Image (cartoon, rainbow, N blue to C red; front, side, top):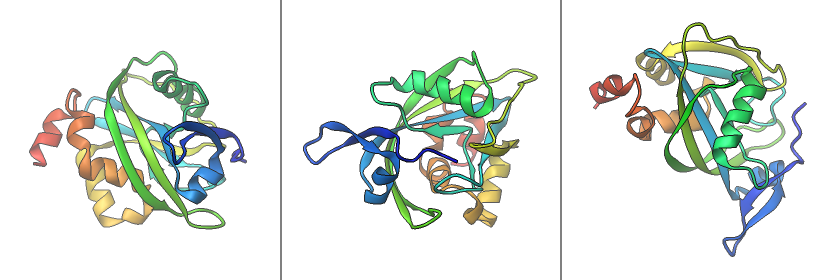
Length: 190
């Protein structure tokens, strides 16, 4: 089961970063740092289905990897660490593509929660093949999907995707994929 009492950085009312338990951050909707990674392979994105034991959004599909940095941990280090821990991906070159801030209600196991995240977004281009080793406490499935197919699936069944993935693709796809193999697909969407 996921450890939700671990402290993560969050901004307090004065703007100072302070350590707060992960569940408390999401119960209170505190603004906090986060990291999201998109791993691409040609024209496809690797997405993950969150494990059933996650304390929020269990079983929903998300981008390749998303997490919170540990106290004092750099975003790039966090992105690499979590790719390894969740998916067994090591040594993939990641490129920082920008920052996104969002606030969204997320379904929790026991109660509705709020994410108010300031997200450092990273993209990595994977080769063939990409060996994966899933941590079942974090990820129950993965699959490769084209950007067009992913958008179509989200339009048909938005409830099976995390709020942040929907936000990323609706509002920030141009920034996320601009310098990648998916740049043309984003431009064609207008």
